[in-house]
Length: 207
Image 1 (tube, rainbow, N blue to C red):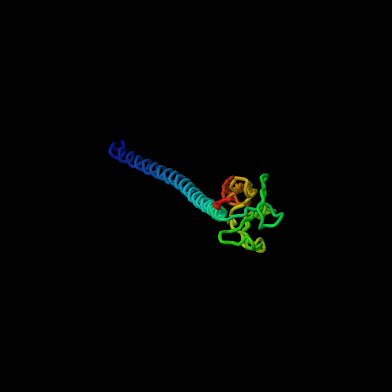
Image 2 (image 1 turned 60 degrees about the horizontal axis):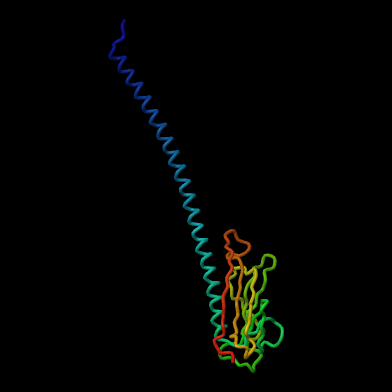
């Protein structure tokens, strides 16, 4: 008995529908997989950018602290007198150091040159092991000290160059500060090296 052409066509349509349905599911699976991969890559990139931005902001904050510290040092030195470079000799007497030193003292604004324990002093403490180097300040001639740079900064070298402290030499006392270091500290992944110079010229006429 011959098969009905109608039944044959109906069966073929049913098979085509099944094939089309299976192909659509595969397409969806591939599309979902690609979408998931794209989302994972995008999320990873976004997290990396966010982390880098936070670290950059923290690094900028550290550098701002250093700039404020140096600016404060320069302003107080300009208003002072009796520049004394180096730990040797009496701090109440002026002293040059054209070759540089890590120790600088001066008579603060309003201080008395007759008192030997009221000088303001800045000195450099070098890094040791895992400890960062830093700048410290004393307001009592070196009897007590206070750290003035952030813990996130490691000062690797600091020098004061002082000239013109001899009275009557027609040269106004001047101190040049040279600071080298690492922002972010020596034991962190994100760091930035720096080399900064600042100059302080005594405002009081050296007659």
